[in-house]
Length: 214
Image (cartoon, one colour):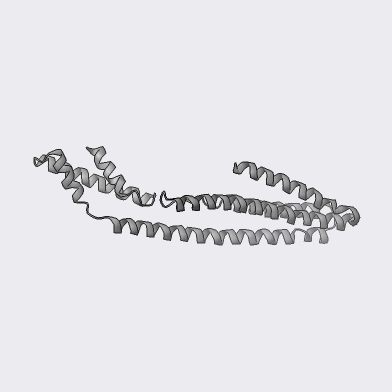
């Protein structure tokens, strides 16, 4: 009978968000039902009668489900806003590092300046990739088609966002290398080939991302 009571509780909460709060409420209500059912059996009620009386005591929990969904949406929005702010800071720092990475080459016109440039660019690239890979996964609030679409869209957007971050990093890094090499060597007539190489690398990266989507 415990399994029957559990199935009843699961059915009641089928439209509730799948989170820790919901699990705790379900377990608490299930235990209360089991205790009430046991008490009714002890009083001499039949199994069917005890079950019906026990489940009838639960009442209407639609308001509770709505509150759980509302709270879940609020938590999700707060988490999304925090992630957005974090992402904005990481992108801002990354762009600043890319802009600053050419300064060592201009000021320190030797190998050490080039090394510093690559360090700045590597840090910026790492931050952009980290930002793209740590965006939280979207968890469905329920099993409706709308929520499934939101989950798919978020996953797809995350992949696209990561590719854009890598692509932006690649081109900013390419410009930095182009400017640095051109200033150091003065070979402006040939250094533009760097952009062709970068374009080929971007195509390879895009192909890798497309394969991962399948």
